[in-house]
Length: 205
Length: 302
Ligand SMILES: C[S@@+](CC[C@H](N)C(=O)[O-])C[C@H]1O[C@@H](n2cnc3c(N)ncnc32)[C@H](O)[C@@H]1O
Image (spheres, rainbow over the protein chains, first blue to last red):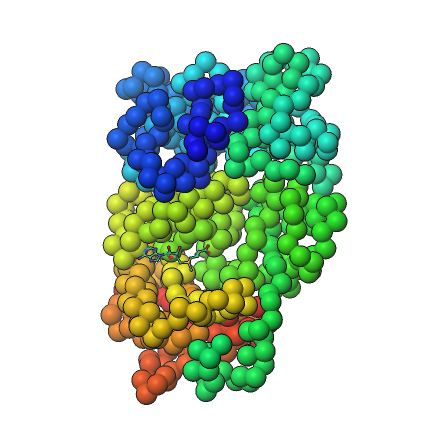
């Protein structure tokens, strides 16, 4: 059930389910394949390339490439050059994908690269996939967990944790094979780290 | 097993073939080099206490002699993908280069798609097509876990594949890992032959011909098309190549495969195939202690 899958009990707008796999399952079980249960649209397969800058923007609410790059830089200290080989695409309202290939815009397809970032909301939120792939470039708002804390986190459970940095979405890492490795996204509020690992990616150790 | 008796005359050492078909298969994982290095994946397996044996012919292909591992950290990070050993052959034969345009015509659940993406360094445009939505959602989820950003997923019948959405240009390479009667998966799935019938074999051969034709048509002159199945039936293998050699401008070419194999057969039940199909490779279960497989490399000539 899509509504049970987001792992974001405090964030109802995300409850349509985060991953495309879950969306696929939704379609297979007779869903209509639309993008978001709050904003039904007839083109759930339509991807629009993000305009480069404000000057090129037609839809005033659509994020721009520049805003996306600035957000990663400001929030996590990820240098924009990390994404030099990727274009960004919006599917539905606010779901941004990162694609290494080339396509006409708009394009109708089942998937275009990787789900990357949730926009059109007060606090933008990276996907677990984006953090696992690009999070090693993050230099701030990164929290390193112990093995036991990491296990709690991937199981989808919240935990109290000391953290004197910003509240909000953090890159969560733990040590694997001798280096800190990004594991996923956590939401830090009120002294606790809330796991944002989607149901399909949760594991019990 | 009786079904396989029909291959007694084309398989050398048929007794060993039969015996191998009855043994279970070891489980094998491929290291996902999009997210890590082979070295670090091996270190993470050591940390987790999971034993592995490298397969010499393919860097980062590791057999796990003990049972299927449970939850483990390298898997959670998308460093590993469970993939049968012979299933790693066609992407290697395809040999995609960085920034190329590649079509994976029968792609779900994406073992070879994600392997192709690793081989291109996750660059270029990799179009992954399947006609089964449920299987496509498994492909999407594998691609996400493995951190692939170069793949565009299309839901369509590969026989009518359209080049339009992705810049309209021809592909540099295409893989047709065709739906088939799956005889070669008997070690993994002992029921694989339960629904076997000659009608089914002939029916699916029609789909295979259509998809392979489309792959040749959508690949540029000088480009490479790889055709593979996990079945032994010449109707689904050499006969499909023979058909495409006649119908489209292409050639079946030799390739290096550092695994024991037999050549393609040129004669089956009174039918003669184009001599060039000998360049295809048949991998039998007793050759390298794997599943059964068929793989051919084609070059587009016009
Ligand atoms: C052998 S499986 C592919 C395995 C895949 N290449 C991998 O490595 O994970 C064959 C696939 O072909 C798909 N298929 C069957 N007929 C098709 C058609 N006409 N067009 C596209 N895909 C088709 C099936 O749904 C199935 O997923």
